[in-house]
Image (cartoon, rainbow, N blue to C red; front, side, top):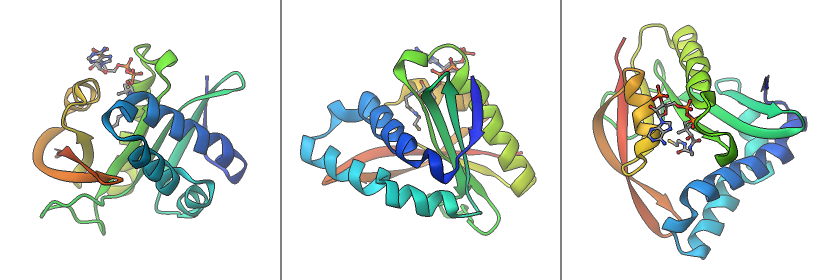
Length: 171
Ligand SMILES: CC(C)(COP(=O)(O)OP(=O)(O)OC[C@H]1O[C@@H](n2cnc3c(N)ncnc32)[C@H](O)[C@@H]1OP(=O)(O)O)[C@@H](O)C(=O)NCCC(=O)NCCS
């Protein structure tokens, strides 16, 4: 497997990977029109191009052979919590592994990469993650790395509002 910084040439593949992995995990939760609106808003190539050009963000994409199988995104915290300060704290914003590659240690390895970047970039400041309240697999990974639940909020996917947990890791 190769873990690469995301570059403009990856954008079409990243867009497809992001849509595929979100849909694999969450499509059953939403009416099709909500899902489509969310995918187009969040993962359109033009949107990703802006985000990867933002030097405050950290992206990695993982290839196995010619296939993109996972990606991660970190950046300044954007979660609605009174202690979350984007001027000095970071967030793991996205961590997605294709279903065919899950359960083999890739998520844990990418988590280590993300935490390494957060450590280097933000020092000892608290680190943040938002996660769907019923995503027990991801929560198990995050709790195993020292994150704890500190709040809740609602995340819009089209017209649907998801219940989300806010997790924080204090160093
Ligand atoms: C969550 C995710 C990133 C974990 O990646 P992964 O490669 O499958 O996980 P790993 O094999 O590295 O396992 C890491 C930890 O995840 C948890 N985990 C993995 N599979 C699990 C399962 N079937 N049930 C419960 N917990 C599980 C465990 O804590 C595991 O650690 P352990 O092996 O020491 O017990 C991955 O499953 C994924 O992309 N899921 C879909 C997208 C998603 O939910 N992303 C997070 C959005 S916030």
